Amino acid sequence: MVIPEFGGDTVWANTVAAYHDLPESVRQLANHLRAIDTNQYDYGRKLEREKAGKLAGPRSEQFVSRIFETEHPVIRVHPESGDRSLLLGGFARQLVGYSRVESSDLIRILQQHVTRPDNTVRWQWRVGDVAIWDNRATQHYAIDDYGTQHRRMHRVTVAGSIPQGIDGRRSVALLGDASYYSPVAA
Image 1 (cartoon, helix red, strand yellow):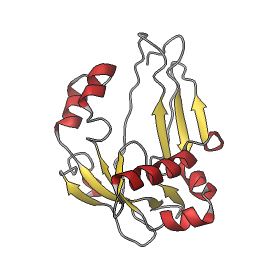
Image 2: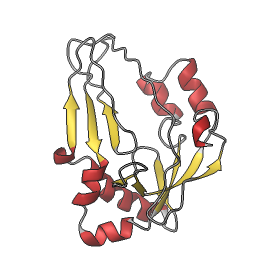
Image 3: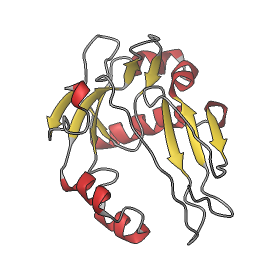
Image 4: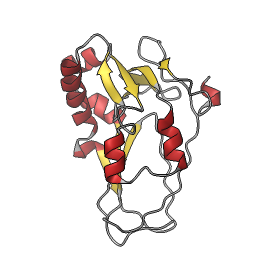
């Protein structure tokens, strides 16, 4: 809708390619890992929100007004293609059965495969552009490098299926009821 004169690009990462890039021994470990995700870990950091001034407004406040925690498989099986992908990103807080330090190290190693340049594409927006991506097989990041310029985008997220791991186990809500946000996933 409104594009700054410079900056404001979006980077997408192919999490299926990232899974295949893992060394075999790391892939075998990841196949059995489960992670705890929470909106409090990323968007819920009040000091960062206030400092950045990026999440102001009623929708953002609504998002962080309730704390959600979910246990997910680290490796997700795509419901249509059967492809395996790394389900991590900024919400991953800790791996089940691992200490915070161990979790942090393992998540960092796995996430570095997701964000390798070979697995990413950077989109420089133009007014009128439309991008469609599959959140089940990608991660995205809006680059905040446009200073005080105005950037306005509209985003629609389609509710989808509950993530399922290689072992057939699905994600499990631990805290909070997100069915309001994704009624088909209930």
